[in-house]
Length: 595
Image 1 (tube, rainbow, N blue to C red):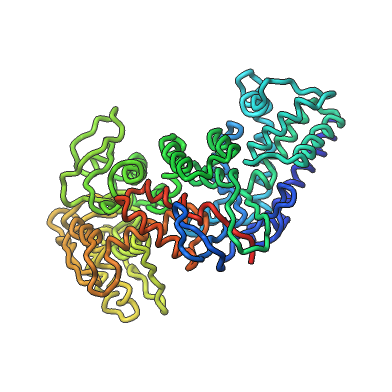
Image 2 (image 1 turned 180 degrees about the vertical axis):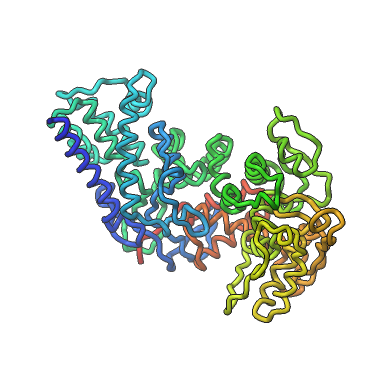
């Protein structure tokens, strides 16, 4: 009976923790409202406006723009899984079993997150299951000892009659889980939960298990909360060292701070520019930085979409799951050579270097790579396949399941690499494939797409957009719907492929390599627009800053963004210097209250 009373009471406490997360105005992703935590502190979420004097990267004054604020930030599924892994050594399973994340440009946009009843239940149930898993592993090197009891040194044994050891363990675990020091009030409340469980018949170990479950379901764990000393003030202030360590860690690792970051936060050294940039170098060298590439580049460059992209097997009989996996890995490794290597981002569309394994080398028609060698860096001697636009993953994910779609390829490149927004037409155009044969019909799979697109370019409602989108995509028509090179539609002897075109800005091309060179040119445009290369680098800085700040950028961010771009231009265009410039910027290190 006592065990049942304990379970009932502790389930109520877990429920109360999640109710706080769901219903308290401070924890909701909606803007405004006070938040729990340190005494007298209040969490607020961002709103645009004008503030007092602010600095830029390296503290250079840039006038009076708004540093903005980040909304109270619920952990997304990737962050939740990684945080559980680092906190208690257990896979959180959110990516596999939870609701999909809401997303803006990226899925770490704090303003997009909600907490409905179904997600509430998932957190509640998971906290209970993971708590049981951790405390069931009682081996000297097991989960309980490694991730809970082992946080206290010298070691101690919890007692039902003396709370000294339990209090130490609770404070240490809560500080790590909540990513900040635990207040006296926090520690007292959590210890009372443990002693209440013991009073109901639990052992000291059982009482600590209930505390761990409650912490894992608490808003302080599920949300990244930043506090404003004056919640109503628009004056920017530095976020505290623990908040800065948390921002940096979730940017680089999609997870909680490690011991090094916690120690730097405790000593306040993390606020130093040199220390902060050194940490970026350290973290990029850590295997956990793969989460940054998989999350940021995976979303920006389409590798995540490639993982679920449908390919019609009757159209592309050589496509298989090993090829899909190889294409995804190639995209991520291709990005990494610009992030951690020496290649400048100005060569993103033109470099002939990429990474292939046995399966991908065969697909590209490259010299064989030994199966035991894994992925190898290669220089592609084929002038037809260069840069990002030559990657099989990009060419596949921007195609239909059964054939290429030049319009989709052109739109993807304009929106994702040049940040050119394409407004939808006032009147929805008819589908290009309306009335066409099904995807399994060879006639649809091998159709001359250029000829079919002529229908849209002569149609008044469609012509404006297609004149902008089609030429870029048609320049990639030598690559089929899974990125294999071809010279004709259908079998040999079919209609020859014409990959020529002219951009709206007047440049003519007849191949991918020529198109890549044009889009990488720093020549001024006759239209007075920025050069294509400036558009490419400007877009990269916008995408990375959006991801780093976990929010969409607004007009008030432009002064900071422009300063970052100016600094980056003098640093050789490496992605690592750009990342450091963004982290040193006031938009990353400061915030303000509501206005």
